[in-house]
Image (cartoon, rainbow over all chains, first blue to last red; front, side, top):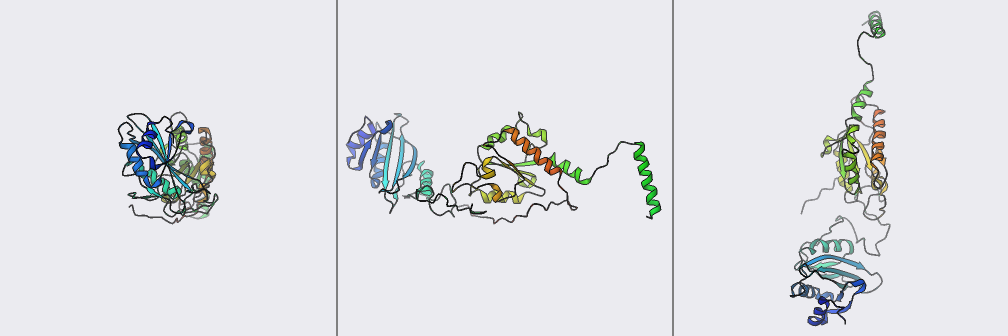
Length: 162
Length: 190
């Protein structure tokens, strides 16, 4: 696999080669697709390795690839304030058990982002301190950004069902 | 009072009026009530989204909602007459809006400010109420995304015309708006 000129990808391929499934740099963004069960190992390496020091989790989101397996992709965007470089980490989790380790222990800012992903996609983050819905209400059933959530389905708390 | 005396009094009053003996006016109680109400609206801004910027513009000195006697925002629904719903209302907020409306004292009016409050606007999805008139009564709709300040002022003047034409009940209490008893969703704060 190629490092695409990225120090982060080079370091990952050297130190943790068995975690990386694929690398690419489409549109100039160095990306590593990694083993979801090793996500914390990867993130910790990127955060703590001298020369990398990705100390900021810019974003954590998910993508639903309905029809392919593993179905859900959790995406981490990391940035280093010291070195001003970026890397994107992707991990695919299966539909039957959409679970991945929570990054809150490494990046406290991941707390609400993981809650949002859980709320809208139903990906469960194990060892998350407070995995509740963030945007929707508790009475809501299902996860509306999943591609198989019916487009017309409405679940109002009051008023007609539109 | 027998008819003879009554006639004498009214004759004297008519003669007084004819001569213009003093400066006074006659009117109806309804007209005075409504005149006072339409020019002293205390508004409750229920601001949730980008229309709030336009609300600030229309409430500020450039467009100056105060010219219409409607510039004193009360941040308690119990002290306000006009509920301005400004911005997208989500299903999660809908019970809160109903509760705020129910807390306002009669007489009360509601302005739907912007496309989202009128119809859901560009959002027809799992999250957004498709028009606040599905959950509370609305007196005036101001469409636009966001509405121009001129549109808001026009809507306010139309509402004032409507208020002026209302009939004040004998007990002073408005009953034309349907009494709402919304299901109050109370949840303990975790």
